[in-house]
Image (cartoon, rainbow, N blue to C red; front, side, top):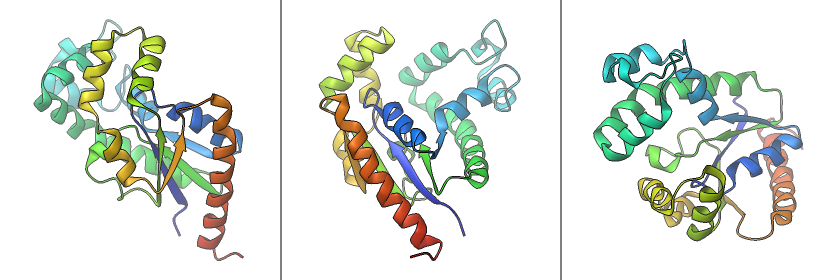
Length: 206
């Protein structure tokens, strides 16, 4: 029987990492799809041969890893290039995420997938979809402050992602991160208890 899997998603600057950390603090295994992508594209990473074959060695940095800034610019300006990159990375990321989920020892797992809705199959990997949500203006301000990007750059990233309404339409659960950060922990604790109960039910417990 597969372990209960909660897919955590949200737009850039929505606070996914903060939410994920609160679950981790409760002993829950968090599997980060972005972290898996970094491992696959670091020097010697399993995805690099296919990426170099598709895009050429000029997309590698001096250390032999994927030049993420250059690839990001290409992906934002050339949707076809983004689709070609995703066709290489997504199956590898999915396989690695599933391997980690099978090895997890916690009662359930959090699978953090920023582009879950954009993948076109948000339900295929999840028992529950959890959305970290805040206003678009908060996303812009937080991302500008964190990443030192301009407003135009952040708005371009937002334009490439699913809309807030689209994400919420897929949500089973929502963490409201539009207010004081102290409000996050009680929301996560309530969800944690709910997921523990669902996991017990799945295992045939009380």
